[in-house]
Length: 342
Image 1 (tube, rainbow, N blue to C red):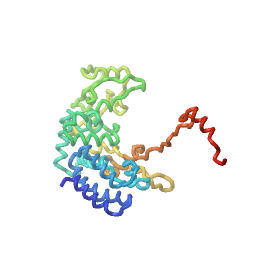
Image 2 (cartoon, rainbow, N blue to C red):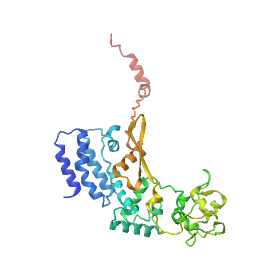
Image 3 (cartoon, rainbow, N blue to C red):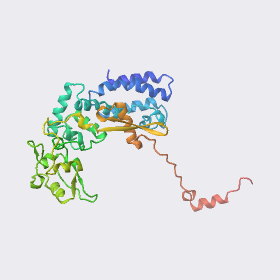
Image 4 (cartoon, one colour):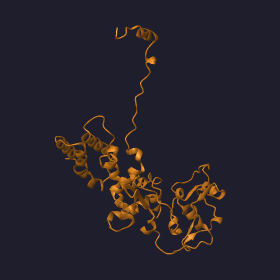
């Protein structure tokens, strides 16, 4: 018996019970959808199957017409929703554990090393930083492996990693150029260059001195259009990176492995604002992204995109004026009719 068949079987059993809409939502979270999570944590579930599950959930929870949006039902109860678990968001959030293992290495797992090697192999760099900072750029390169493609979708939903002022050239050399450079003016013409390239592809890195080479003597062979735009001032480097090109810049550490530790990502956090106020002040909770639990991520995603989880605005039907619907002869006949009181 397949998983979908089991869910349909339990829906049939619970439909015979006299449950309210709230009760059906509780049953859906605790009995029906809970059968999916242990599979979704280790397996990539097709989007078509998720749509089928959403249809089953909608038909079970809302046995009336017209039915409200399923996304609105996923809002917390304090905001008028039912607290249903969004299947698509939960499946993405469950894989955040792999980012935690990949970065913190608190719970060693054989799969962590495989993910690390595959990411570096398919991106072409000896670091996972390019993938973490620009997942949308490498999404096509990782599409051959569904699990890595799923991680790419998760990273695109998470807050981006900002460039820290504490990063040294040993780490910043792996920052993608799409994150390291930006137009100097809003009206600057976009430049065509390799979006997968990182800083060390444009500015060579000296392993001996632990810093970048002299940029004033460079004649790059690739991405010359971007280099020309940087020289002419149409594009500019991120301020935390431009100071590392200074000839008098001295790196803080010249030794160490080419990878990075989780300490360098201490500023990568995700925030959630609670509805509960203390003395009229909203309470903000900040958690490291790789340590965030699935429930916390789902709540943050609801706050980040409120329009998606709101009820659609009511549309008052606009009836045409009678003068437009009736012809002149009909109007003449109307005014010739006898009055009701005669």
